[in-house]
Length: 172
Image 1 (cartoon, rainbow, N blue to C red):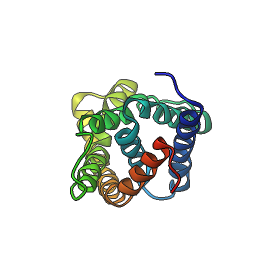
Image 2 (tube, rainbow, N blue to C red; image 1 turned 30 degrees about the vertical axis):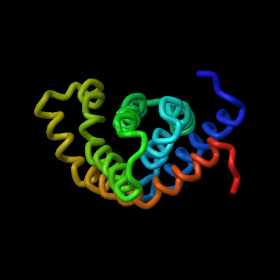
Image 3 (cartoon, helix red, strand yellow; image 1 turned 90 degrees about the vertical axis):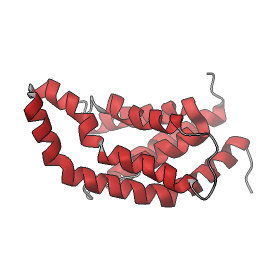
Image 4 (cartoon, one colour; image 1 turned 180 degrees about the vertical axis):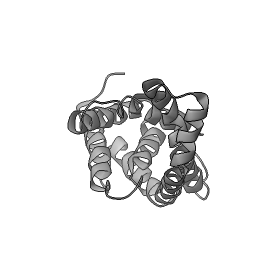
């Protein structure tokens, strides 16, 4: 999977955009555009979308600190990438925004559940303790899911269109 100079630059920009938008929106509880960029990049670049995804994860660790909170990022975002990989390559334009937004929203809603195994391992939580941890985070996961759905429906289609043009090398 050799990358061209153009792809390297695009993936570096996407990873940096994921990180920058997440940092810029940190004042909002669980609202960011990381999922939007991951799904859009996966729709266009497929397996190669892992490059900007893991650049984002690396940047987040480098600039926010490699700590226990960061370890689940090694797999939580990959689950979203995997779900997007399972989607058909071409969806009808009328339903694509809702499917893409739905995948983003579901990932946001399940973020605490996906994060929970690491929390249980790091903090020695029992099964009941893990369920309590998940339940305590449900309001934030609901916000995360709803914001991911709305931003996905609104932003993924134009991002996919731009990324496809960049991938083809057209600049109209």
